[in-house]
Structure formats: structure tokens, C-alpha cells
Length: 471
Image (cartoon, rainbow, N blue to C red; front, side, top):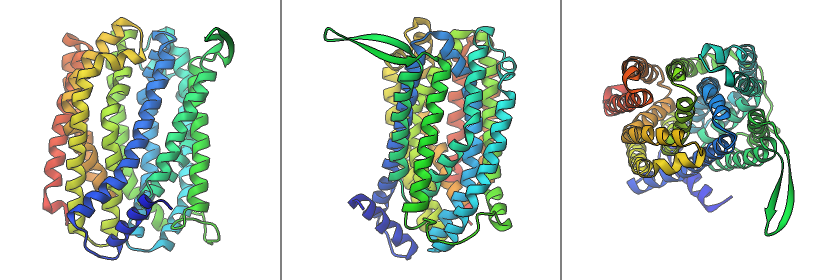
């Protein structure tokens, strides 16, 4: 075990054992949990950048095809994540209380539960894949690629679900390093597979030496297959470590049923359903935004998709710190230490706003270069840079919303924060986008997003500092 892991375990044990933690120790624990999660999130963003660049080199239409269905894939991702969270938060509470036997029982029951859910969801995704581009009013030239990408993605949802479950369980138990390392491995695998599956066999000149690089030449289909294969390999590795090697939760030699019990499932539904409904509402709004953007043309669709990927460079560190906030809130609540829990809430949110604020400045300054990496098309590059610079202003408040939400998830308080996210996006973002798109085009849509994120961050900060919410 590394020195860093030993320090993390030691500080988490002080929470369970009701020992005091100084401000320095709280900051240290926040950093120890956040940094591996941030690295994993950034590696995922690097994967998206490389994916976008590889597909973007094929032209605007392949990029637009993937961009068109990206919000729909996020919808499925969100539902899978909500399902896993319903069980992993229960594990965090049990670990905080020092009841590892009960934590293992929840883990066993979760595996069969999430598999059943993901199979049903995957079948639904495959069933609608042919019709989805038509529903989104896309140009006929990208229908085939878009539906194929979504079909392949949906078919492998069980693998993605198990990956989410394994990572969530490890993180809620306090192990951030292994899921982070495995997600980095997934990114590397995805890039390697992309290299061979997207492009055809070609010749490369290396210092006068001509090399033949094999390739399947599958284009968008190759990008989809590369991603899902990387996810499947990572899911297998994640579950192996969780169930066989990770001592606090390993199931080897530990007897018990995998059949879900009523109490465990009811708690999972109570925690996960608001999150799932929120993801449906948010992704539904994003799909509606795609519906609004699609008539603006292929260049606007591609610029919008690239800008979303580029912006994630800023907000994924927020999600990494949010994962740390979930773990800390869950374990503090399980240990009955509510005052310490509130302190961690303030620390994680403050750190996230600082990090994302700095990254927002960098995003504004380097927007043209970031978009330029992903697309050689001048129209896409110019439009993408313009909308990125609009969004950069919202990053600190976006951090407040992301991390506060993760903190409340760890508490198991998901109904009100989910409702706040839902109302903010549907009432503020969509209303403004609908009003501004007719006169300002894609820039109007992103102005609406910027205003909404600032509003959402404000209401989450008000909730974070309201002592009545913690009772």
C-alpha cells in the first residue's frame, strides 16, 4: 500500500472513530480524495479531445453525427450513474459507521440489480436508435452514422453500468486511486483502438522509412466500437479488484445472497430515483437544445458538440472534487458527525470554485486553440471559440452547483437538489435559449447556458449555507 493510500485511510478512520481533525487535516483529506478523481476526470476529457480530433479529421459530417446523439448518450449515462449511486451511497454510510459486513451485503445485492436495469435500458436504446436522428431533425447526410453510433453504445450499456458501479463503490469506501487509474487505462485503450478502427490502412513516412499502418477504416462505427470495448475491459478490471482484492469490500470467502432484498432496493430507489429523474429532465432539456440547434446546420451542430467537449476541461475537475464531497459527506453522516460534515462541504465547494475559476480564465484565453485541435474547419473553429468564451464566465458558479450537489448526494438528500437542477435548466436555460436563438443563433443558446449556470450556482450556495437543511 502506498504512503498516500495509508494517509487517506488513516484520516478516514479518524472520522469513523470520532477523533478530531484539524483544519489542516481536513484540507489534506479533501486533497487526497480529490486529486485522483480529478486526474481520472481529466484523462476522460483527454480521451474525448482525442476522439473528437480523430473523428473531426474525417470531416464535419462524422463529427456532427456523434455530436447529434451525444446528449442522448449522456441521458443513458446519467440513468446508469443514478442506479449505481443509489447503492454506493448506502455503502458510504455503512463504511462511515464501521459496519463493513453490511456494506458487503449491499455490494452483493447491487450487482444483480444494476445488471437487470442496464439490460432493459440498453434494449430500449437499441430499439430507438434508427428513429433518433429523425426525432432530432438532423440532416439526412448524418442519419446513418448517428443511429449506428447510438445502437453500438446502447448494446454495451451493461458493461458501462458495471464500470460505474465498481468505481462508485470504491470511491464511496474511500479508495479514489484505483478507479482513477483504471479510468486512465480506459482512456489509453480507447485512443489505441480508435487509431486502428477509425482509419483505413495507410502509409506513414518515418525518417525515410515507409511503414504500413493497419486499419479497419470504420469511421464513426470504429469510434463507437473502440469506446465500448475500452469500457468493457475496464469494467472487468474494476469488478475484479473490488470483489476479489479490495479488503474492506471484497466478496472472496464472504458468504451471502446476491438476490436484492426489499430494504436495500427501497433505499436505493429513494436515493437514486430523484437523481435519475433529474438526469432525465436535464438530458431531456439538452436534447431539446440539440433540437433547437440542429436546424442551424451541420457546422453549428459540430461547433456545439466540440465546445461541450472543450468546456468539460473546466468542469470535470469540479466533478472530481464532487466525488470527494460525496465520500466525505456519506462517511461523516454514517459516523454521526454532522458538524464535521458541514465543514467538509464548505471546504470542497470553496476549493472547486477556485480551481474552476482559474480554468475558466484559461478557457477564455485559449478557446481558439482548443477548438482548433479538434477541427480543421474554419467556420467550426470560429463559432466554437466564440461560444466557449461566453461559457467561461460561468465556471466558478458551475463549480458551486456541481460540488454542492455531490455533497448532498453523499448525505442521501437528493430530492430538493435534484428539483433545483431540474427547475433551473427547464425554466431558465430553455426559456432563454428559445428566446435568443432566433436572433443570435448558437451564441444565444450559450448565453442562456451561462446565465442559467450562474443562477443555479447561486441557489445551491444559499442551500449549502442554510443550517435547516442539515437537520
